[in-house]
Structure formats: structure tokens, C-alpha cells
Amino acid sequence: MHHFSYHGPNLHCEDVDLTEIAGLYGSPTYVYSAGSITDNVTRLQNSMAGLDLQICYAMKANSSLALLRLFSQLGTGFDLVSGGEIRRVLAAGADVKSSVFAGVGKTEAEIELALQNEVFAFHVESEPELIRINHVAGRLGVKAPIAIRINPDVDAKTHVKITTGKSDNKFGIPMSVAATAYEAAAKLPHIRVAGVQMHIGSQLTSIGPFREAVEKVLPFITALQKAHDLEYFSIGGGIGIIYEDALASGSPTWWEKFAAEDRPITPESYGAVLQPLLQPLGIKVLLEPGRFLVGNAGVMLSRVEYLKRGASKNFLVVDAAMNDLTRPSMYDSYHEIVPVERDSSRAAMVADVVGPICESGDCFAKNRELQTVGEGELVAFMSAGAYGFTMASNYNTRGRPAEVLVKGSAFELIHQRESFEQQIAGESIPAFLT
Image (cartoon, rainbow, N blue to C red; front, side, top):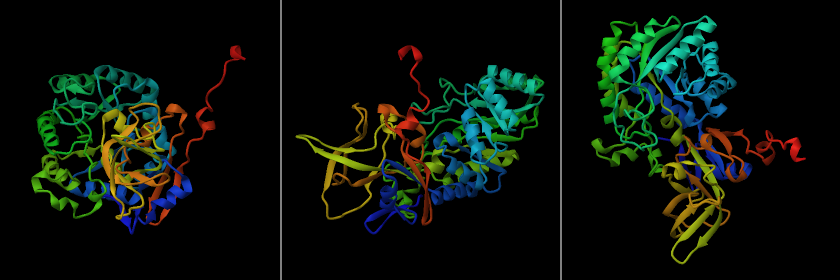
């Protein structure tokens, strides 16, 4: 669920008219709902009632400082994948003592930064990484808490570019050699074995792969507990969100149109299956959701530049482009596109929704049916809170969009639109060209 809905003819985020935000800050602009994020965290916590639970928000989905502060206030830790993300959490006024550091290519400098800030644990992706962490920890005179990422070889049945739990993915250590890896870890003088980790992929809309992976790893953890005093089991993230019919999914009754066995995954259905499997372990459980917490909590506002009518096809040219929202061009992803000012008297039209970048790949939707809109009118790209702004670039020397956070009837600019001067601030012309 989310807090985007029409109040009269205009689309609102919570109690704020999105036309007001666009009027103040222009477009394209990302708008986030604090209420939606809070609800998502609360529902996930409630679904795992009875467990010693720690949610670590996978901040690669959206690393805005304001959102990191909000998550910190909600009691979450963070799933970190770079030294820059560690620094972002610190800059947001939070700490990383309840956070985990993942990723396949941790540098010595990043490992040192994590240890200096007392990260909860490292999620180790390979044996060479284990040796490196031990070396850095030894240099600092500390013991590094670790969990080895187990690759359970489970097909998450998601997009090929975001699956992580198969044996031919780059992530984790195969289960067949995991016990040996743990034995090696326990012998390293500056390593403390703290847990076990897995993560099978992103945007999973069925509970089946989660159940299969957990059931596959549980016997290994039970055996491992006899040799090590395990503190936790991290089952990763990956809960999917609604992209099609996303606006309607904000209604509490939307789910009722589905038969129970066909309903998209919810925190409640997720918890109903996994909580009973995890309860007997008697150790802390970590969840590392990203997209689920922020995806449906954000939209991208864009203004129509032209309605280009062709002989066989219409093109709706908007001021947002593939540099602002990369997912459609990179993953062929779907985003629902709706008018910010709805008018039921207008006829529908079918058009390709495209941006101004000089590439055919700068296309958000093909043959999409939507209300007829014209030059100067606003549209909203739904479900844009995850992997939207965080993947934005300066391609075609375009400044990255503005970001706004809404809470109830209050809203504030949390990231100014990037200026041309900011884009070139780090560049210089060498003396030999003058």
C-alpha cells in the first residue's frame, strides 16, 4: 500500500497536491511519502512478531540523506555495499552499529572504515575477501564479525540482471563448500564467526523461492550451530512491489480482487510462511529489504513537452529522460504513468512515452494507453521510489532531478535540482591545452 491518490481531479501524495510541488520545484522531480515508508517498515516488523528481528534497509535502492534519517528514526539498520554508503549513513546522523556490509569487491579502505565505525557484521562473498578482512582487522587490533554469504542455488524466477542466488551468479559461496569456508574462518585470529547470510534476488513476487531457499539453508545452520555460537541468520531482501496497476494498489481493498493463491506477495503472507520456519532457530533474524520499503513510496513528476502525432504512432515527449529514470531502458521495466490532473471527459490516447535524449532507448513505455495530455501538463511515473534517483546520471549533460519528501500536509525539498555548474565543478582543462 501507499499514500498516493486522487483528491478531486488532482493526484496527491498524502495531503499534498502534486501540482503544488511541481509548481515550486519544477520537473522532473521525485516525490516520496514518509507515511508509506513508515507503514511498510511497520507491517514487515509486525509480520515477523515473536522473532528477534533486525531490519537492515538496503540503501542502494534510495540513499537520500533524508530517507536514511527517517529509517534510522524507525529503528532500522542498513545494508551497505560501499564505503560511500557508510559515509552517507554517518552524514545522515545515524550509525552503522546495527548495519551489515555486503558486496563482492570490498576494498581495504572500505573494510577499515566499516571496522572503525563498529559495523554489526561483514557479509563475506569469497574466501579471498575473508583473508583480507582478517588482515585489516589485525592491523587495527580488533576482531571482525562475519557471516558467509551462502549461495543456495535457488532460481528466484526474476529478471536475469537481478537474480543472485543461482550457482552461476557472482554472489556468495556454494553450499557444497560453505562448511569448509566456515572452518577456515574460525581459524583466523582476527575473525569472529557471527552468522549466516543469503540473498537470492530482487523483485520476487512469489513466496515460493523464499521458502525453498530458507528450507534449503536451515539444516546447514543447525549443523553449524554445533561448532559455532551463531548470533544471527540473514535471509536477505528481495520482496517485490506492484508496478502494474500501482496507483490502485494503494487501496486497502485492491487485494480482494485476487484469489488467495494468486495475490501478490505482502508482508503478511511473507511472514506467515517464513516466521514459523525461523522461530525454532532461537537466534536473531536479519531482513535486508530495499525496493519493498521505498519503491511504491515514490513517484517521479514529469511535464509534457510535445504530443507528436504520427501517421501510425503517437509520441508523448516528456521532460524526464532515461538519465532520470533508468529502469525502463536498462531492464525493460514497467512503470504506470498517470495524469497528475485527471479529467474523465477527455478521450484516451495510445502513445509511446519518450524522453528528449538522442537514443531510441530513451523510451518509458510503448503503445501505452492513458488520458490525452498535452504540452505543459504533468504526468506521474508511479513506483519510482527505488532505483530511480539513485541510478540517475548526467548523460547528455542533464542535471539530476530534484527530490521532495512529504509527511502529512508538510513537504520539503531534500535535494536541489543539479545545476550545470555543479556538474562541471570537478572538471578542469589541462595547462597544455591553454
